[in-house]
Image (tube, rainbow, N blue to C red; front, side, top):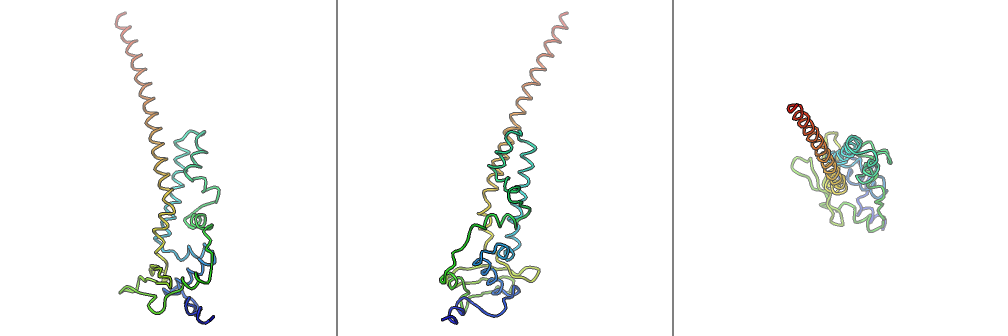
Length: 213
Protein backbone atom coordinates (compact mmCIF):
# COMPACT_ATOMS: atom_id res chain seq x y z
CA UNK A 1 0.00 0.00 0.00
CA UNK A 2 2.84 2.39 0.90
CA UNK A 3 4.50 1.66 -2.44
CA UNK A 4 1.23 2.34 -4.26
CA UNK A 5 0.73 5.70 -2.52
CA UNK A 6 4.36 6.63 -3.16
CA UNK A 7 3.92 5.95 -6.85
CA UNK A 8 0.70 7.95 -7.00
CA UNK A 9 2.14 11.08 -5.39
CA UNK A 10 5.22 10.90 -7.56
CA UNK A 11 7.81 10.06 -4.93
CA UNK A 12 11.25 9.41 -6.33
CA UNK A 13 14.87 9.99 -5.45
CA UNK A 14 16.39 13.44 -5.12
CA UNK A 15 14.05 16.18 -6.35
CA UNK A 16 15.85 18.60 -8.65
CA UNK A 17 14.49 22.11 -9.31
CA UNK A 18 16.26 21.98 -12.68
CA UNK A 19 13.60 19.46 -13.74
CA UNK A 20 9.96 20.48 -14.16
CA UNK A 21 8.54 17.58 -12.15
CA UNK A 22 11.13 18.03 -9.41
CA UNK A 23 10.42 21.76 -9.13
CA UNK A 24 6.68 21.14 -8.91
CA UNK A 25 7.10 18.47 -6.23
CA UNK A 26 9.37 20.78 -4.19
CA UNK A 27 6.75 23.53 -4.57
CA UNK A 28 4.09 21.04 -3.46
CA UNK A 29 6.18 20.03 -0.44
CA UNK A 30 6.35 23.66 0.60
CA UNK A 31 2.58 24.01 0.25
CA UNK A 32 1.79 20.92 2.28
CA UNK A 33 4.30 21.93 4.97
CA UNK A 34 3.03 25.52 5.14
CA UNK A 35 6.54 26.74 4.28
CA UNK A 36 5.92 30.18 2.74
CA UNK A 37 9.63 30.70 2.03
CA UNK A 38 9.80 27.53 -0.06
CA UNK A 39 6.55 28.31 -1.87
CA UNK A 40 7.63 31.87 -2.68
CA UNK A 41 11.00 30.62 -3.89
CA UNK A 42 9.27 28.50 -6.53
CA UNK A 43 7.03 31.28 -7.86
CA UNK A 44 7.98 32.66 -11.27
CA UNK A 45 9.76 36.00 -11.44
CA UNK A 46 6.67 37.56 -13.06
CA UNK A 47 4.58 36.42 -10.11
CA UNK A 48 7.09 37.74 -7.58
CA UNK A 49 7.11 41.05 -9.45
CA UNK A 50 3.41 41.47 -8.64
CA UNK A 51 4.19 41.40 -4.91
CA UNK A 52 7.21 43.69 -5.33
CA UNK A 53 5.08 46.18 -7.26
CA UNK A 54 2.39 46.17 -4.56
CA UNK A 55 4.96 46.88 -1.85
CA UNK A 56 6.20 49.83 -3.93
CA UNK A 57 2.59 51.03 -4.18
CA UNK A 58 2.19 50.86 -0.38
CA UNK A 59 5.44 52.79 0.05
CA UNK A 60 4.30 55.44 -2.44
CA UNK A 61 0.98 55.78 -0.60
CA UNK A 62 2.83 56.22 2.68
CA UNK A 63 4.77 59.14 1.19
CA UNK A 64 1.60 60.67 -0.26
CA UNK A 65 -0.17 60.49 3.10
CA UNK A 66 2.65 62.37 4.81
CA UNK A 67 2.96 64.91 2.02
CA UNK A 68 -0.66 65.75 1.30
CA UNK A 69 -2.92 64.83 4.22
CA UNK A 70 -3.35 66.83 7.43
CA UNK A 71 -1.46 65.21 10.30
CA UNK A 72 -4.69 64.54 12.22
CA UNK A 73 -5.93 62.38 9.32
CA UNK A 74 -2.75 60.44 8.63
CA UNK A 75 -3.20 57.63 11.17
CA UNK A 76 -6.68 56.80 9.89
CA UNK A 77 -5.47 56.97 6.29
CA UNK A 78 -2.66 54.52 7.02
CA UNK A 79 -5.15 52.11 8.53
CA UNK A 80 -7.72 52.42 5.75
CA UNK A 81 -5.20 52.05 2.92
CA UNK A 82 -3.23 49.18 4.48
CA UNK A 83 -0.05 51.27 4.60
CA UNK A 84 0.24 50.48 8.31
CA UNK A 85 1.19 46.90 7.34
CA UNK A 86 4.61 48.15 6.21
CA UNK A 87 5.64 49.12 9.72
CA UNK A 88 3.51 46.60 11.62
CA UNK A 89 5.05 43.62 9.82
CA UNK A 90 8.35 45.21 8.73
CA UNK A 91 7.51 44.65 5.06
CA UNK A 92 10.48 45.50 2.87
CA UNK A 93 9.80 43.54 -0.32
CA UNK A 94 7.43 41.22 -2.13
CA UNK A 95 8.56 38.17 -0.17
CA UNK A 96 7.54 39.85 3.09
CA UNK A 97 4.13 40.79 1.69
CA UNK A 98 3.59 37.26 0.39
CA UNK A 99 4.21 35.81 3.85
CA UNK A 100 1.68 38.15 5.43
CA UNK A 101 -1.00 37.36 2.86
CA UNK A 102 -0.48 33.60 2.79
CA UNK A 103 0.81 32.64 6.23
CA UNK A 104 -2.70 32.02 7.55
CA UNK A 105 -3.73 29.94 4.53
CA UNK A 106 -2.71 26.66 6.11
CA UNK A 107 -3.71 23.59 4.12
CA UNK A 108 -5.33 20.71 5.96
CA UNK A 109 -3.23 17.80 4.76
CA UNK A 110 -4.99 14.50 4.16
CA UNK A 111 -4.12 11.29 2.35
CA UNK A 112 -6.53 12.33 -0.39
CA UNK A 113 -4.81 15.68 -0.83
CA UNK A 114 -1.36 14.12 -0.89
CA UNK A 115 -2.43 11.66 -3.57
CA UNK A 116 -4.52 14.16 -5.53
CA UNK A 117 -1.73 16.72 -5.71
CA UNK A 118 0.77 14.18 -7.00
CA UNK A 119 1.81 14.19 -10.65
CA UNK A 120 -0.37 12.03 -12.86
CA UNK A 121 1.54 9.14 -14.41
CA UNK A 122 1.87 8.62 -17.28
CA UNK A 123 1.28 11.88 -19.15
CA UNK A 124 1.45 14.20 -16.18
CA UNK A 125 4.15 16.46 -17.60
CA UNK A 126 3.82 18.18 -20.97
CA UNK A 127 6.43 20.51 -22.51
CA UNK A 128 6.28 23.11 -25.24
CA UNK A 129 8.47 22.61 -28.31
CA UNK A 130 11.38 24.61 -26.86
CA UNK A 131 11.03 22.85 -23.49
CA UNK A 132 10.99 26.21 -21.72
CA UNK A 133 7.44 25.81 -20.44
CA UNK A 134 5.67 22.85 -18.92
CA UNK A 135 2.24 21.90 -17.69
CA UNK A 136 2.00 19.58 -14.71
CA UNK A 137 -1.24 17.61 -14.43
CA UNK A 138 -2.12 16.11 -11.05
CA UNK A 139 -4.25 13.12 -10.15
CA UNK A 140 -6.96 15.61 -9.15
CA UNK A 141 -6.77 17.05 -12.69
CA UNK A 142 -5.35 20.36 -11.46
CA UNK A 143 -2.89 21.94 -13.86
CA UNK A 144 0.22 23.93 -12.95
CA UNK A 145 2.04 26.01 -15.53
CA UNK A 146 5.82 26.10 -14.98
CA UNK A 147 8.47 28.14 -16.76
CA UNK A 148 12.20 27.52 -17.07
CA UNK A 149 13.91 30.69 -15.88
CA UNK A 150 17.33 32.15 -16.61
CA UNK A 151 18.98 30.53 -13.59
CA UNK A 152 18.02 27.08 -14.89
CA UNK A 153 15.29 26.58 -12.26
CA UNK A 154 11.71 25.69 -13.11
CA UNK A 155 9.15 27.85 -11.31
CA UNK A 156 5.36 27.98 -11.03
CA UNK A 157 3.69 30.67 -13.15
CA UNK A 158 0.13 29.57 -12.40
CA UNK A 159 -0.19 31.78 -9.33
CA UNK A 160 0.22 35.11 -11.13
CA UNK A 161 -3.54 35.68 -11.42
CA UNK A 162 -4.01 34.66 -7.79
CA UNK A 163 -1.28 37.13 -6.79
CA UNK A 164 -3.11 39.90 -8.62
CA UNK A 165 -6.42 38.95 -6.99
CA UNK A 166 -4.92 38.77 -3.50
CA UNK A 167 -3.36 42.23 -3.86
CA UNK A 168 -6.09 44.00 -5.86
CA UNK A 169 -7.22 45.82 -2.69
CA UNK A 170 -3.92 47.71 -2.64
CA UNK A 171 -4.53 49.20 -6.09
CA UNK A 172 -8.13 49.98 -5.15
CA UNK A 173 -6.98 51.79 -2.02
CA UNK A 174 -4.39 53.69 -4.03
CA UNK A 175 -7.14 54.91 -6.34
CA UNK A 176 -9.23 56.07 -3.39
CA UNK A 177 -6.29 57.84 -1.77
CA UNK A 178 -5.38 59.64 -4.99
CA UNK A 179 -8.99 60.79 -5.38
CA UNK A 180 -9.00 62.08 -1.80
CA UNK A 181 -5.76 63.96 -2.42
CA UNK A 182 -7.07 65.46 -5.66
CA UNK A 183 -10.24 66.57 -3.88
CA UNK A 184 -8.15 68.21 -1.15
CA UNK A 185 -5.94 69.95 -3.69
CA UNK A 186 -9.01 71.19 -5.60
CA UNK A 187 -10.58 72.45 -2.38
CA UNK A 188 -7.39 74.24 -1.37
CA UNK A 189 -7.15 75.78 -4.84
CA UNK A 190 -10.72 77.07 -4.54
CA UNK A 191 -9.92 78.60 -1.16
CA UNK A 192 -6.77 80.23 -2.54
CA UNK A 193 -8.69 81.55 -5.56
CA UNK A 194 -11.32 82.99 -3.23
CA UNK A 195 -8.68 84.75 -1.15
CA UNK A 196 -6.93 86.10 -4.26
CA UNK A 197 -10.22 87.40 -5.65
CA UNK A 198 -10.97 89.07 -2.32
CA UNK A 199 -7.54 90.71 -2.17
CA UNK A 200 -7.82 91.90 -5.78
CA UNK A 201 -11.25 93.36 -5.05
CA UNK A 202 -9.88 95.16 -2.01
CA UNK A 203 -6.98 96.50 -4.05
CA UNK A 204 -9.36 97.74 -6.74
CA UNK A 205 -11.45 99.51 -4.09
CA UNK A 206 -8.39 101.24 -2.69
CA UNK A 207 -7.27 102.22 -6.18
CA UNK A 208 -10.74 103.56 -6.94
CA UNK A 209 -10.76 105.68 -3.77
CA UNK A 210 -7.31 106.98 -4.64
CA UNK A 211 -8.50 108.09 -8.10
CA UNK A 212 -11.42 110.00 -6.56
CA UNK A 213 -9.12 111.81 -4.17
